[in-house]
Each structure stands twice: as structure tokens, then as C-alpha cells.
Image (cartoon, rainbow, N blue to C red):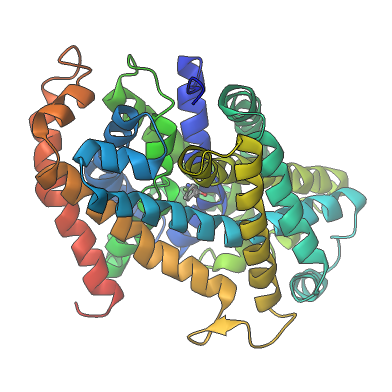
Length: 451
Ligand code: PFF
């Protein structure tokens, strides 16, 4: 087999991995989950979850991936010396393939909205915008077209390889994403009445806190950091031996949190400025926001339109850096396990995910009956992965690292053979052995209403 490629630079490592973490989960999911759970109070709990569960969880996947120097399934196998743990890698590959299938549908909606706001067909009154979404989403062709187009865009980055494809795309897209975000935050925060939205995000109201908030925060931390999908494990196999894993994990969690908070600062000031409820659900960005932008900038309609274009471009870029990482997990697996050329492996994944994306897209209105357990296939895939498969992957990884892996190997990998962060090891070990499994078990008990 040819020499395995890896990320060439330190900033490449951080930007590519942060690119996987930063996605629709930050720009779309975080603001509405925070909105539904009381704003600032949620953010405080969320930060706690990042510290006790997110960073240790990332470290576990980094340790397995970098030591394994291979796709996720083989990395678990190599680390444990047993075929059984390979299954955790397989689970992660399956999870990320399913996520890519439905995520591409939502990313495709963003592409359509980017197109529509550019050509000007998205403007109209609130009723028009609401109808626009339902008519579009239930059209049999258009959303399928955009969803598959998104997977193909991802495909063409992936076939260029780890350095020329993933690393280069992340180095271009991440800075643009950040600049777009800052521009929109400034525009949104300068609207009259915007301060209320800022206060909502920074002033905690603990009266709404209950165990649901905690569990939502845990689920959001998993999804947002791409934990439990073997994604971080696959990317870590491209890290260099010198990468300081705890520092990289902390930097990525910090960037991910920063982008999520900035996304809140982009959305809530605009939402408050026009008097919309902050607790709108998932439809926030496709039904409420186009209208919010129009109303908020009625005095300057051109600016409103530019902001809408920038906003959907931002969503597309954020989604793309994440779909690239989901695609890479399966592509690396097929390339290394079936000994296929990278291009052909990428096509396998592109085909499987495109079929799933078409089915998910049709299930939200165009064709009746594509449902599982009374939910559209898209909602089912979303719930199955976010509520079950991701936490299961995280739980098994934590149990493996904490209880079954050779602790000397874990220590060597975490500390780069005793040269960095030695004092962190006992804290890390305690966390992955006890705290992470217990917290994830709590999530499960809650999901299945046993709590
Ligand atoms: N972390 C991504 C987001 O916040 O949108 C979603 C994601 C990416 C999940 C990669 C899973 C994955 F493997």
C-alpha cells in the first residue's frame, strides 16, 4: 500500500478538525436549541458539557486514531488487538454515512436558499416565505437535486486527497466562514432593538433549567463536536506524532463554541428586533429568518438581501466542511479495507449517500409512506443518529479507552511519550472511566424514558 498521507501543517490539523465540528450544528441547531432552553443558562450548561464530556471524548478518539494510523475500524482493532472492538469503528462509519445522507438534504436546502436569495425569489411577506419552504421541500425534484449536488461537491473535494482536498478546502473555507459570520453579527447587532437579543444570550435565566436542558446540552455537544462517529478518529490518523492532542482538543472545542455563540449573536438580535419568538424550532432558518432579514432591514432592502445571501453562503460553507469529514470516514475505510483506489471508494460512498439523501428528501412531503415508526425518514435518521448511535459510539469508545485499552499505550499517546501534558493523564483517565460513561448512560435512560 502506498505511503499514507496526512495533514501537512499544524493549522491544517486545527482548521480541518474544527471544520468538521463547525457545521449546521453550530449555525442552525445551536441557536434554536439555546432559544428553546432559555439562552444564556443553556450556554453555561453547554460549556460544562464540553469540558467534562466533549474534550475527554475528543481525546479518546484522537488517541485511538493517531495510534492506529488507519481508518477507524482498523484503528480500534490495532489498539485493542481484538476484532470485537473493530465493531465500534464499523458503528462510527455507519453512523456518519447515515448522517451524511440526511445532512446533505438540509445542506441542499441551504444551497437552494442561497440561489433564491441571490436571484431575488425569496422576498415576499411572511406567508409567502412560509409557503415558499413547504412548496419547495415537498417538490419531488428540486430538493433531491440540491441534496445530491451537495454530496457531489463534497465528493470532488474528497477525491483530491487529504492534503490537496480536505486540508486546502478547510484553509480556504474556515476563514471565509468566520469573516461572513462577523459581518452578519455586526449588521444584526446594529439593528434597533437588537440589544434584547444580546441580553437573551448573555444573561442567564436559571428558572427554566431542568434535566431536559442538561440532556439537550449533552446531545448538542456530541453532535456539534462530531463525537461518536469515528470522524475525529479518522482525522487524528492524519495528525503528526508531534501534535499536542490535549491542546488541539481544547482549541477545537473553543472554536466550535465561539462559532456557536457568534451564530446566536447573529440570529437573536435580528429575531428580537422584529419581535419573533426566540424559541422557534428547526424551521427557524428556513421559515422565520428570511422574513426576519427583510423586516429588520426594511429601510435598506438591498442590505437585507446581501445579508440573506451572506447568511446562506455561510451555512453552505459550514455544512461543506462537515460533510467532507463525514465522507472521509467511509472513503478511508473502503480504500484501506477493500484495497480500492481512493476515487472508487469515494464513488461508493457518494452513491450510497445520494440514494439515502433522495429517500430522505422525498420523505418530507413529496412521497407519502417513506416513514419509519411514524416519522419521515429524514426525522428518523436524525433521531436515530443523534439520540442513539452517537451516544452509543461515545459510550463504547470511553469504556474501551478507560477499561480495556492498555493504559500505558493510552498514556504514551496522550502525552506524546511523556513529553507533554503528563499531569493531565490521571484527570483524563478518571473522566473517561467514570464520568463520561455515567453521563452518557443518563442520556440513554432519559431517551428511553426510563428516568
Ligand atoms: N459537527 C457537525 C455539525 O455541528 O454540524 C456535524 C457532524 C459532522 C456530525 C461530522 C458527525 C460527523 F461525523
